[in-house]
Length: 153
Image 1 (cartoon, one colour):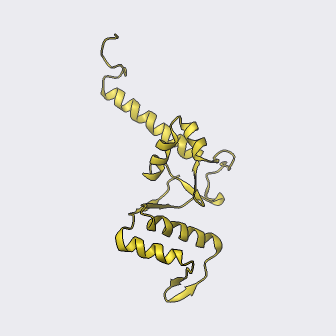
Image 2 (tube, one colour):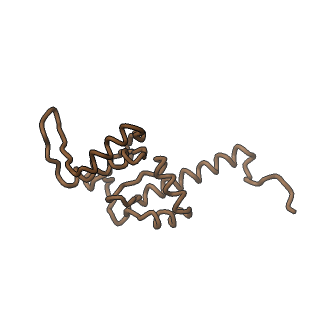
Image 3 (cartoon, helix red, strand yellow):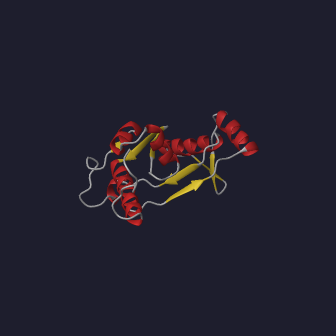
């Protein structure tokens, strides 16, 4: 399943300061075509999370999460669970820090539940498969047997 995402750069300087002040006031109003709009709680929380991260100097990647009606046939939540960063790192055999770096860079898609990252098992598996393919391609380019060609000491 392809997933489109878009990354926005961090705000800096006056823009970040102004947004931080506006968010700290607690009065958040959204205007669409000049009309004040009251957002549902989930949308409001998502918008505030996005704005807070931008104001805090973080680049932000926005991606669509798949809903139950857009999943592949036969795919159920039990077969593609959302994992915590600890669970995903353990499943991939990597450190938590490296996993966070991969999600920050957009290499592994991430969903946020509040401020907590959640990673789909299928995304961890896809990343592991791509790593295996890259190692195999590199080994083939270096002579095919994957040995260093040096002597043991």
